[in-house]
Image (cartoon, rainbow, N blue to C red; front, side, top):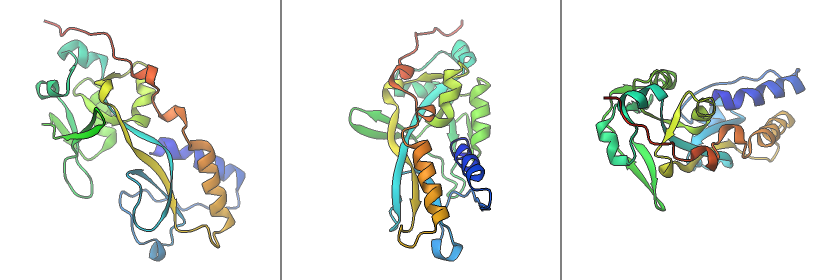
Length: 215
């Protein structure tokens, strides 16, 4: 999420140098009143705890691999093929649970438990393993997009990419909201709503040409 939020924060600081932001990165949603939080961002389903939330962009889940992996092991063409591949799994840092991979199948979202060749609770480590050609990973679209566009990763199973999750900006109320908070929310909306920099477009998810595994 940092690559999405930093340009917004940088622009806000340039426009309002007198304001000193206090930025905290955390996977949990705490008590807003006690912690005096003005505005937050969340990737996933919409917040349900009485907060006002605005969806900024879809969050895609994209299965991808490095060209080196495909050259060595081949590419899966079906979800079931993943059982024959080396895959990574993300361990949720709060719950400790391995996160299933999610796929769009028809109009349904299907969750599949993946037997991992590597599991980690660190996103950067997982990305490095995928880029090194060690494993196939299911990455967030905003992370995968620049790597796919540069040719460092190849999207796989593109017919099953999901976008049912979203990136949300959320806050308690607009009533008596400080001007600095309104200004930040407005800037985030202006910069991020449906920003194609972070969302792979249909032509970028065209199935890659089949590549045979080396013998």
